[in-house]
Image 1 (tube, rainbow, N blue to C red):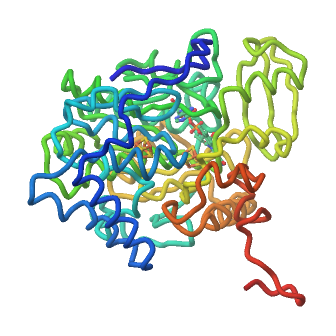
Image 2 (image 1 turned 180 degrees about the vertical axis):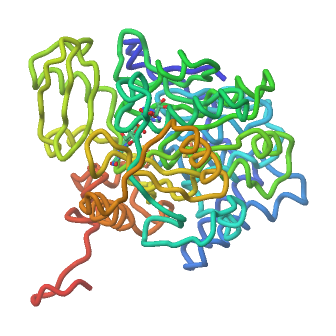
Length: 445
Ligand SMILES: Cc1cc2nc3c(=O)[nH]c(=O)nc-3n(C[C@H](O)[C@H](O)[C@H](O)COP(=O)(O)OP(=O)(O)OC[C@H]3O[C@@H](n4cnc5c(N)ncnc54)[C@H](O)[C@@H]3O)c2cc1C
Ligand code: SF4
Ligand code: SF4
């Protein structure tokens, strides 16, 4: 796999297109029309996958064509890279947050790439069983969890480098010190563009701490899984935004049993999902810098707490309104319904108390890792009742994201949204053209 970020490389060359989409394989064309028929007929979304699974016993088909036609071409790809990392023969490069089938002729018709795509279909009904929830489990509308609390690291260095309470980095480091994991799949940064993310397989304390804190641009963390698998480094923790955790779970739980998904099942033992309303384009960093009249390279950290709080290298802090920043939200985030990383072992966000991480323990693995770090004095906690606004925001932001209905395959394409003049992922289904219509009495229809 080659990684290419043309914004970073400052090149004006268009992204490579490997396949001539009109030249689809006849079986791919059949699958695509079967898939569309299921959508048109209003079939149960859990049945959509049968459009391609029926071909498995007949030898499969070049499924990247379905992915390109239904996800990438309509502009619905969220960039999670699951198709890239699951492909056993490295068909894809990752160019500007999208897969490109550069080595299409290598395809072995295994269909894994479409199985792993969180945009094409909802996860299979057995997903919750697969992730092994800590019991008793509750679901208040943002995915099943056993308990929630505010937590922060007790190590001043981790706390200083972390985005909120630094618990993601702290638990990873604790797991590494105890020998429970060998390393972690994280987001690093380009040295001269520190607000733009890059994937990283981190194997030392220094590397984990260099990756700490948040970048609000899209960081394709999970691309580092390829390096880990090639070198057979595991067990590992993975940190990602919800779309990446969803893509990873689909890779692990694929109904197609291939050695790649077996490797992910065995070696990814802990996942951290960062709460996420949306991420922002790489250009947004230049725009923010322009608004505050600073050099983009001087931005040390960005945190979103009601407004966009920008900390500069000289420790000066400037604030820009989130409404203004939202102009550069990634349009593709419309095709994502997951705010709380509902399939992660541990969910983590910055809502509630400044300097603490709002933490949701969802699974047995998440519970064991969290409690081990707590017992060894690596973490301190406070109850959620200390700042009820955290829970209020959790409910509201998650409910807003779930308004992104219907499911992505039934949503308008990027071009259709351009024609409607509404590319904002946050408002399309709340106040934009997709919002429920209200009658004269204000009731929604
Ligand atoms: C794009 C984005 C949007 C977010 N939106 C919200 C939100 O709406 N509400 C909310 O409560 N919280 C949100 N968060 C989460 C929040 O910013 C913190 O990541 C979270 O509170 C954990 O903080 P921490 O101090 O415990 O983590 P830390 O110990 O600082 O660790 C953070 C980890 O995140 C990884 N990371 C950094 N940037 C990215 C990225 N772009 N993509 C994937 N991984 C990355 C780092 O490698 C690091 O391992 C968002 C995070 C991101 C990256
Ligand atoms: S959403 Fe993820 S799996 Fe689907 S095409 Fe895009 S990168 Fe691949
Ligand atoms: S909003 Fe969804 S698609 Fe967009 S970065 Fe966040 S998790 Fe991924």
